[in-house]
Length: 322
Image (cartoon, rainbow, N blue to C red; front, side):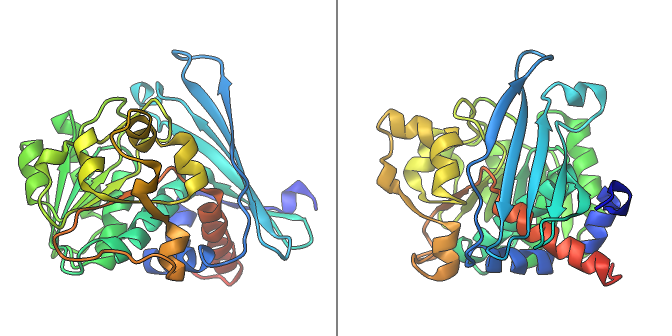
């Protein structure tokens, strides 16, 4: 196929073509399918402070169609007014022909949020109404929208180390969620955590920002920011108190510092991880056991989610939907 025949979809296209409820349902189907997502390849690249990465993530269905995502991770980008994550997703048809190129960062934001919301549908209390977003990056608005799509959220709190960025993230969230939802930025983090039903951490922190002693009974903790063994968003008390689930065992046991570090130090056991997202979707493992239980979902991302999102987006684009 000629390169000029490729459908090229921008970030704006991605948002228009991936309604959150439909995307969440596509991920639910994907995690119960026989699609394949091999382990991603992580390469260090030059520049910055030596912490730049290039991620290569393939996934494909049994019929032959699939995707390859190429993502660069440049932690120094926010200082330049740019997103930390940049990249593209190339989509292939069942016959192997490349049919589309998608804005990879936009797809990543949408599918990451959708995966957390999918987990929340099994692990958070059905009456959860207060959502706390910890982190003010580009992922924050999508996380808020996704969680509000599966639970009766009436209040969203936003916390970040810099007040102006928290206010900006809150403004972006207000533009996405229903007007009936109250969105506020700032405040004391410990108080916000103690009041929240769902706590979603989407930061690039290398040291824990979330303390387990702050969590109230029945809380659901959603950790999506860290995807490196050397990074943590939650302290030992969080994982010690929670019933733990992951997006995939393969990814979490290779990259999730929030779990690997406590396991290596004997704070929790490998068996403390109750199941992965496919287990919840397929009913092999029960989700929340009772209203007082603290549950935790740790996500490092999988190309299976990119595959599901890309196929939805390309199909809707081909049908002229938005």
